[in-house]
Figure (cartoon, helix red, strand yellow):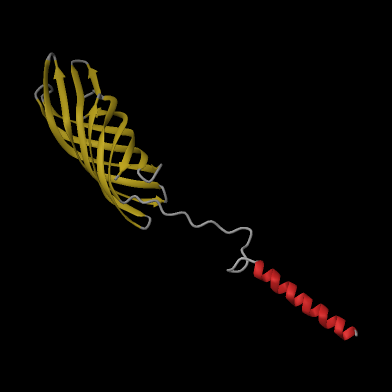
Length: 207
């Protein structure tokens, strides 16, 4: 009699266990916490267009004037990306309010531009880069009511940081040193050039 009762109890236990297993979702046990998927790498690849605002300060070579003032302009470029490494090219054109007067002389830099290479390292949506290349622009000299403008060529180099705000929009801060080589000016009787520092903030739209 006892054996019959034990056998019946064992059979009932197996039946209850099978019924409970049938109610569980298929695919096995799901833990209460699943680690999130890894964040996708931010893409810097492709063309972009943007604008910038900043400040320029420097000095006229072989002259006591030190032109400074606000600047603003447009930039465009293209990035290539291989893993964390980002490289490409950028061109910009700037309007400048940099000017200074000392004694009879006045020098100003109405506009300038650059064509540069860029190379840097991306930490997901933050890009640190170095840049350098060609600089060009107009320098105007004045003396006793006479004025003349010269087109100058030179070079530029600098550093920057750009932060991706959305997949298409980014913001940057950039420092550039711009050296516009000397040319002859009749208002001074000697060769003059312009050496400038730029600090500017910009926004880019990535296509």
